[in-house]
Image (cartoon, protein in one colour):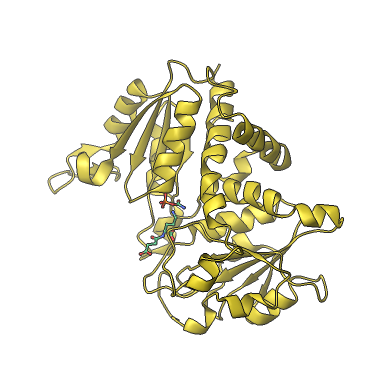
Length: 329
Ligand SMILES: NCCC[C@H](NC(=O)CCC(=O)O)C(=O)O
Ligand SMILES: NC(=O)OP(=O)(O)O
């Protein structure tokens, strides 16, 4: 693997899930794979899980790690071509990316969208600039439109959570549900989750209020229901079986780009609502706002898989780094 920019960069997802689970069982099995190699983590936005799980993954592979909070600790970077840099941005990405490439063997970047201008966000200016000007592989730590380390983590976690379906010899019913949130949030996590589910052998449905459909380029043929109860009770085309997995995420409107059109609290995930599912496990990428997105009676119950899911971030990152290192040998 040269770069890890989207879930499509993993050639065989089912094999990758098994290999990542092997790393979970034997974290130091490849402790020499990254010896004398350096990972540089660049954050333009906040992080808890991505930062620490990726650092841990790199260290498990024997790598050195350097982390930079770009906006607070470093010079403000200019990404525009031909700009007269007489305002607040002191350094151009052209220099920064080449300099960082001399210090690091892999560069990983987090840069959220502005959520003001759809076409500008979809250009993925930050990630693309690193890809263009750096001479080392690039890992996406959540960009404007994708969070592929999260998507891969979610695939690993769903595999772990659906053993009962394998025993019953049936496909898991997976539902991605929108939930309310006070702020305008990006589409990246939801997009990568959709793209990941489209590659797995699952019955997959999205449920969201009208006006909240994700990009049609991401959704493709995936069914969307505007009725959350129906989606939980009768997901996809599988008849009366309920959802096995309920994946919760807020996103702002895509049609009315970046707007918060609804804060409809009736979409919050509660224990009562989960009764219609097939004893579903509840997933969320975190951080989650309790009693807005998901109620305490779910997060504090056995239905919640969010801690297990966050734990799996390490193995997803470790698999990705190992496969990039392998191709660089
Ligand atoms: N990396 C995981 C999610 C990051 C981001 N969530 C947030 O910004 C939540 C912040 C808040 O709750 O105010 C998102 O939805 O893409
Ligand atoms: N899920 C996730 O990416 O968490 P952080 O934003 O804390 O990294």
